Length: 160
Image 1 (cartoon, rainbow, N blue to C red):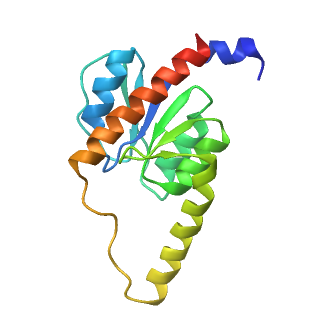
Image 2 (image 1 turned 180 degrees about the horizontal axis):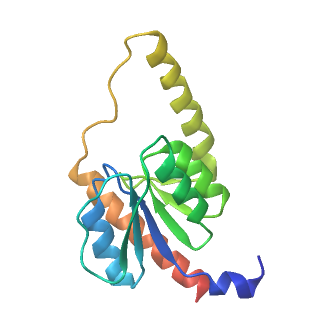
């Protein structure tokens, strides 16, 4: 992509919105930065009545929302998701990806995250391994706010 094309690409936030615990935080930070937000889910949800917030309802089915977000993501996008495989797909398109706990996915962390996800999926298939992520905490919420702010500020600086 040429510099002219990069500069023309608008900064935006895409949200894997099903079960996303930080939607209010996303609205707060995006509004402060003047950046549009697109929430993608396979069920309707309430969103603020602001022209910078868009909701896309996709059809039911495995990975339909993920496919939409991965297709739409680009090097001026911040994607918010807890889905490791979606994070990897979006990073391949140059997007900044932040988990809902505020931990950014990086080139250094995505490979091990995918491997661990696959290992746990295999273990769940053959045994009674259960569990899941720890409960969402105030620390996670605070880390998320900071991470999203930093990601949007970086994109603005880089595209300034």
